[in-house]
Image (cartoon, rainbow, N blue to C red; front, side, top):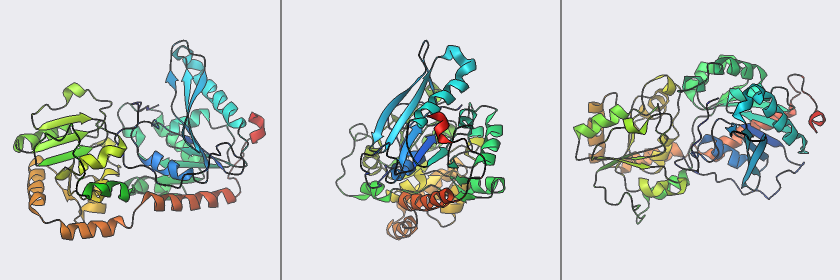
Length: 407
């Protein structure tokens, strides 16, 4: 499995704005949506949280994370209500029982779901690894939201490729998190749909308002400020950032977000690079309001080949011009229309940034807002839900054990 375990809600892409549902978790009148995720709910606020917080308006949502291993622990499920219709479950297992973990996980989840009297049940997968302990559990619809190419990430298990193939075979419905990923996977399933990153425009447009206070840990940093927010891992090109910082020592670079899967000691140390750490989603617009440009220094490697960065439209919603390395989905969706400047080298990035700092923003912002009007998490979820509802109305694609078997 490929757990990303950093704790509380930190850097993210905007909170869900779906209507708050009544406190009815466990109602048999609403479908049960069971999500299996490699990401922790209380990590960064991103695609799963955006979508499932909206799903909770008309579904009961159970979000099952990867297990936590505790020596001597009795197998069980830790639980947390994170919304009126959203419950997070974390399996707790003893690492000394490694050979029995798959069976134990299946037993824990089967018992948990068997006690829920819902008329219909949807399994929503973010990680194919979860199929190992859920393949025999009853469900009315199997959905794979292929958010990333997990097999290309650092530390990914070699078995993920075969597990994903099995999940494609089992799934009734497949979504992809970007255009490149859709093109790579579209022949793998007959009912696959592309849903690229969307944006909570209203949240990030707060950064355009006058009078937003500059956060205390940023207020003393001089201008111009170029900023990045997000997870700092193998997808982040630290050398690219260091080169730009050396080329323009008078510019200040502000980096927000947790560092995972890489050694923080290896990150570049410069007087004009400011590693401010993770920030709450709610505070992000306050930071962005006092930046001059957005920077997306993504590495060009296997882990970024298919990404569709959610922060691209978020920077735009905040009114910040952006310089990005040539990520395929960024180039095609935002570079060609001239909404984002693309730079292959640090020198090109400096040139693009200098041009953006001198450019009037009025005409560019008008084009940005026209584009953002076509994209929202509300609209994305509405389209997804329509396909889910249609899938529930279709006859089951294959045999499925009756729910009562697990009661």
